[in-house]
Length: 63
Image (cartoon, rainbow, N blue to C red; front, side, top):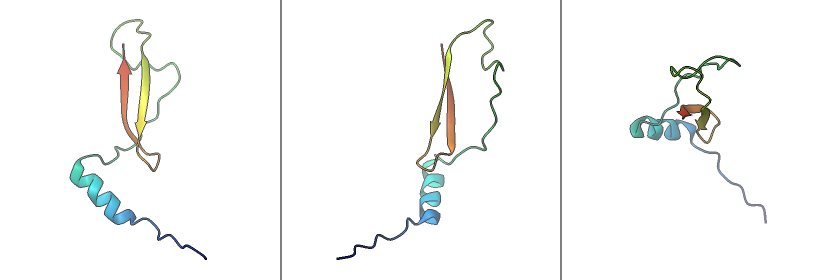
């Protein structure tokens, strides 16, 4: 028995992401050593949140 799974409807997924306001922002490069915080000598971590397709959704800097 061969089960065939349909391909994801990427257009519908993109439409739903737009409607929910979770569409990806254009990815901006982060360079090593580049400050991500305005606090002098900040040692906080920056994490990236990506969607199911691996596109960057948001960067969060934590103190």
